[in-house]
Image 1: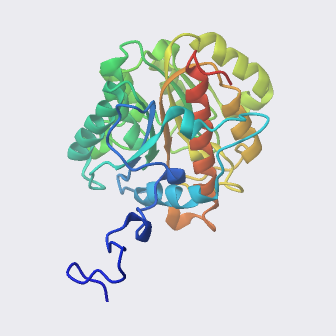
Image 2: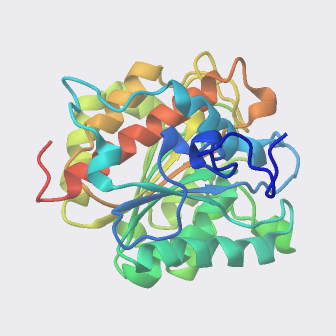
Length: 326
């Protein structure tokens, strides 16, 4: 057997890179923390609060998405007939060092990791994790973009009041209430799209609007139609630095069963992906895809769809660059 002292066949180094593979990265992009030549960086955020009634398991989301991303190819003619990974020179930074359920320390690590990406003029594309991971990311992006706005696409508002101890104030349901209180987003120009289904308390939609956000609920989305809503989004957010928060439960559980809080009546895979494609031209500064829960998935289909959402986000990142044609 080859060893350091007895390397085996002449001319063959036992440590030759051809003999070894790297851990799975998103779509096989390089694993690196060197962002000097990259316009986009993938980052896993394997954190969930671990609290009832949300399903526990999104802490395993990033690696599931990476594994399923092996099925995804980089070209999408005629919609995006270019390799976004290559154009952006994208790298995978691995995962943030977090401890699920340990909120304060994990939030600090998430904010700092995302800040290091954003501060290098690189676009972060993160994979959660539950919806709680968004708040520390907003804190990081606000440090760079003082007029940051949010486009939140989700089956839930994530804007419950949440008063009390740390767990009551910081969880998947209170993210955008805390963001409004902290002033890390311009609520008057931020939009929630898609909330629907059963909720845990009354007046949640009203509370969301009271925080200053615009809310287009799931019923209104389908009544107005995707075309009208997308045109409205472009009009409202044109020229602003946009943080896209995409919760996988925006999709119906029939195509995305492995999420933290499945809710019937959502978008088909085609509708959700088309919506993303038609957001091209907005000034996206960060992408946040969250709530894939592998223990509740079926055949990896939700993680596979989330990986496709990530690739759509990369195409959007390309199209925000004035020097890169669609």
